[in-house]
Image (cartoon, rainbow, N blue to C red; front, side, top):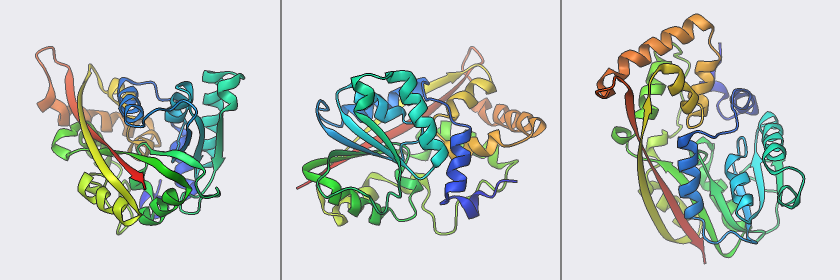
Length: 280
């Protein structure tokens, strides 16, 4: 049985998450990437650091829009997968040459000061053991005028896609529990992150909120999309034997009855925000 509570901040856990991850090409992941890119400013020729790069989906997109980028992650399995994804998407030409992936602790960045123009976080800020320390490091490696771009989830009531999926898994996988003292993803509010960024030396905080609804005809379609937005919860689901997965899907069907439309499909809302701040 996986022990998320006691391994969440370890390479072991994130290697597990990476082992069930695919290159994110769902409608949801594309929406997240498009909005984050839109808040990142001009990318051509800009040096980008992507923290918690996962499968590299975001940073590959940013390179295709002209950036020179580095994606870092604590997971060796994840870095290897991201490199394969980049090879498959970018080939061996000039774009691929502008992208590197490195295994690295985000709390102790192995880069000189003022090395980057943009630092991005996609589905990553809440997985850090010490977000203030990481943001201080990000401030150090950004050049003056550099931009921090962080994706956050919105209100629980507007993010039933995340809630319904996680609660369905947790019903059969009680170990889907955060470490003691960890801050819930929904408690990384714009107000909280604004204060974190101010404490790290950033200014000019702005935050834009987005909403979307996603429609599912059956549970398998839901899990395919859920994998692209909730890595740990999906890992908990994917690690179960077939009979438990079937029970989880039945729980999802029951839990999502309230969200069925006239066609019988499940329509679940998702809200997210893109927060930005600048190094003076």
